[in-house]
Image 1 (tube, one colour):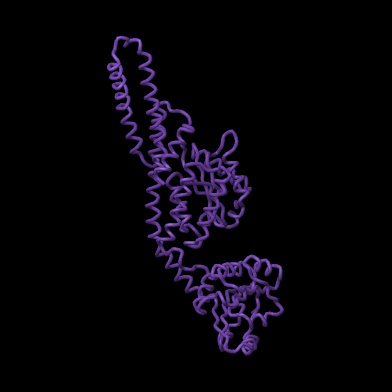
Image 2 (cartoon, one colour):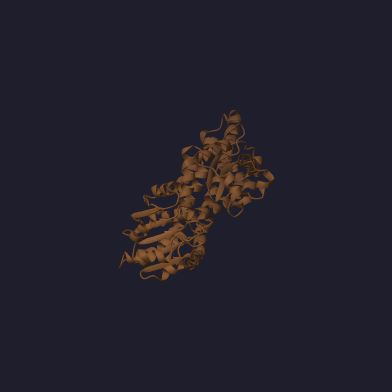
Length: 442
């Protein structure tokens, strides 16, 4: 048999950060884990992809016995994270066959992300799959699954507006700055701070193609690291007033308990740059910029509360797109389900036919001496009758296999294989059938 699809995983929906970070795998570690799942005298699975991001760790497997594979995969994860299996079991979910496909389609489309519709997950899914494929850890079934998921994610983004609205405060801030200033490419931007929010801000600016980005932080090493990652440069913290005088946009996000930019100091800066407006966006809580700065001529000041309304509105826009995305996913899932059904039943049907042909050939050979006086035409008629009888006997089990669906399909396949003595894997012959199915349905 070709085996079944199994997903064993946990995500931000089922596990806290403290647990997820203990089961996070870098690229090399993910490849090693796949090797463990596929290796040994009794492998857990025959194909494997490990998808590990900050919000999820998921094992996508093709296995012969999903129940046994689920237990062994859980034990391996528990051992890796040094977590009691009973504790981990409460955070783990396990899915099979079409439910695996539905979940991965939703993941690739961004419907299962912490930030609804995020674009980054599509690339993360692709990289995980390509890494596992390059390591030789995938096969026909997993290849088809991930190809279908990536194509579905691409369709969702192309045919819906799920990913169009900005839904993080830094990305909304950058988008709003671009609208207020009529574009950002020619603007001189100053980022104050070098923490996580500052990093997201720099990333959003880079996506907008901003040319000049300065990073100011009390710790020069952190500022330098952030600036280098996004093609910016370091601004001296001690010369912050001079940097403010040169900037068009200032985005501040420090963890300082005290204000960084005061109204009195900024009034001096603005006096030195007449006719040049300054946009200040304060992303810090508590605030880095004195609210009184908003009253200064030429200054526009926005804080987190000003941006939250835009975030909520954009998130609502994305949520309205979810039903459209789900329609696309369900349509593609039906297509994958047809493929999965054929993959599961066709090798068994092929083996049934081959077994029947072998039986017919053996019986004809055993009785060849009894037909010494029969003409060639008579021999052909006997052979045709024998084959017809065999085909008609196989008609009902063949139709039952083709008509079965879901869990019932797997049970029907098992019964037919047991009754007709079709033991063991079909090997290369089955893989040839799978490859032909992939060619026909691609």
